[in-house]
Image (cartoon, rainbow, N blue to C red; front, side):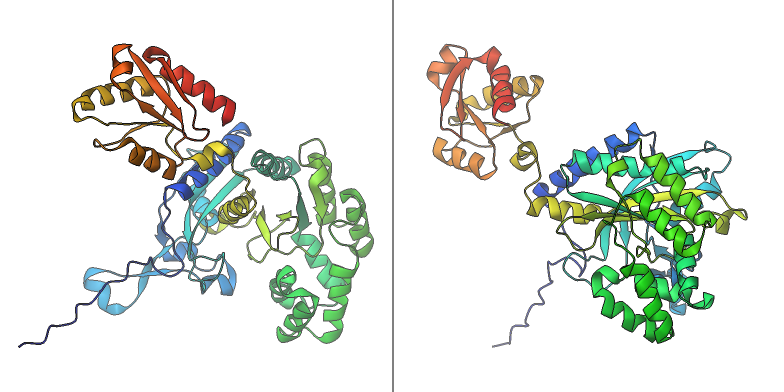
Length: 454
């Protein structure tokens, strides 16, 4: 007897660091992005989409040495495959592709171009809880102006979006790259080590003061300068210490009335009249690791949550890499994945989102009634309801159980009595109540119940 060859079973798990999104998760994602999109459009931001991959030279050199290592490279194909060289790469973020678009379509875009973009990005990071290799970013950017109104409106739009998503305990941390440079210089850190110092400082909320101190030394900053840095950045007052205007004044005392301080003061003044005015906190330890930031930098901090829900800043030099001349630009990226996790864990989604995609199921208990069931479903849909038809005749108990398992609140029953009276029995699976209503009124009846009970 011949030995049977063991059949290779292909794993059905998605690649490490990626996920499949089932219907419940997609509904939550659509709800969040819908709220954010509506807010951004209220502020005059327009939608934009770019390809999933870019020419590799578009991405390399824009994110610093650590960022370059995390770019997913795509090998050349066909007759060039044997070279092992890469000519394309999956986009690392949405900001660099935006800079390319502005350079490419400079004559077609308005003088002040405001855009939002919600698409996936890819990073060759080590997967961990809450850290993925493929994830969505939700960005808004304003191109063409150096006015502090730009930062103020970005902060206000982000604030409005979070508020409409039912976040209440959050602050908007604000700092400036010029302030960071001034403080580092005041601490005695050599200019050629400023970039290394900012990378270490950006990890403060993750590794703490002692961890940053060790990183400073490991990156070549002498112990005296490291201690002075921590005193200037940490001991001089945190983001909750006094008003934003007071915090700017204290920074001015440390480094003088340099342009960065004046710009920070102008942003604070501009944002006072917006919904974000009371949520601004100056945090001189905020660094933001990406190397392309040139001015104000910002982040969302939520109470009882480590890390941020998003961040951004001004990057007036990035577009010039493609265009040959600097173009003012400022943007913010909302951490969509983290928002979804936090909202799920804290039960922040409305009942309509949790309920599912169907309002009512039309039951079929008699094969002779198939055509009538489809006709009833069409009538209910015309009445504005989301309707599913149970696809085959079955015991009503099984159909009710199926509907409950789908979190569908209502089912229809059309028996002989209902058919004779041109009526429909509507059963509320949440309460168990069953009501017979005229068929023409069925959709209105369900809509009223949904509006009352959610």
